[in-house]
Length: 399
Image (cartoon, rainbow, N blue to C red; front, top):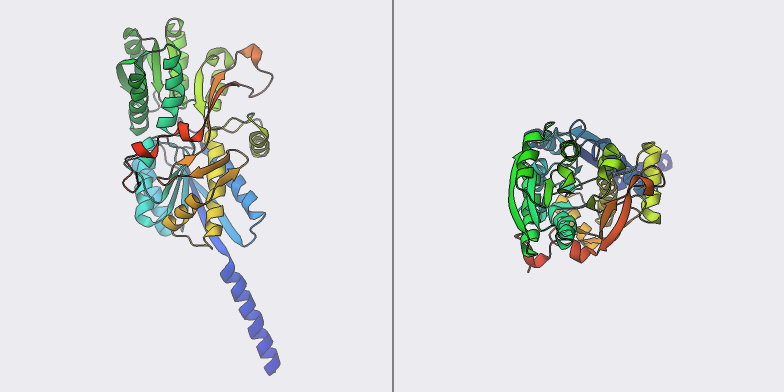
């Protein structure tokens, strides 16, 4: 009887030890499921996140990981309420995506206050690694600095030295116009002015006519998603593109797919990922397409996968420590490596460093099949693509 009791006790201790060694994580994909950014983020970001979880768990059986999602509706108050509820009541450890800079800035502060992790794979504002930087946030896919220096810089060098901006009237559009304007002026160009439009507007006629009246060589579209698509469609209908070039400063492969090559060919754009770039990007796209048949992943979808995988590796390296600041610190120590983004690193200010790519949209006759949309013009090295630390306004960065 005594021996039996000892055996039972030993078995109980083993079970308790096994249970104790399990690491449980909850990741919340806070995204646009119903608005202008649903196609370029939305369900695809949920798929990208889950693909990273599935890949990680093949080698880490001791992790239990749940992925949940919600629609921030492109409203900072709604996004902030969801983030607080997730952190305070639902045990969420990390929030990912947030393809809206206004919402992202709100979540950025909440994650810091709650000592959680924010993987900013969807928003563009470079302020997330500037004046609003946080030890709990990693900005992953792209930002307004990289976009302005990639697309804007290339067009100015090609002779497009006078600009007028059509700008989404919130944090993202304002940051993109600001950063692109600085590139234009630094290269000897001129900005004639700008007009602001509401997010998710359907009628761009009055805004486009104001832009046309400025008589500049370039109309810079400091917007994204459905807004960019609608602006390009209506500019073509009004004949504006016959004499003025449009610069889509944040453009996605999903936008090209929506517009078609006939309407979008010749556009120059900067992206962090393209499905047909190399063997790794094609392998990720194949896995993505198994979950989303007939679709190619956008750079945000690829970013969700890449950032989630590195986050999970950092939690494992931190022996399951789930403090947001501690995990982000570990993310900065580890080199990044995955199929979609290749090799990279996370800088002191939370900026993920990787190559960016300058593409031109193909003519219809140049495309060899579905989603074959881009020609590679240039590869931008990681250290050139993003704002140097010497110019950073991040308060905890050592210069």
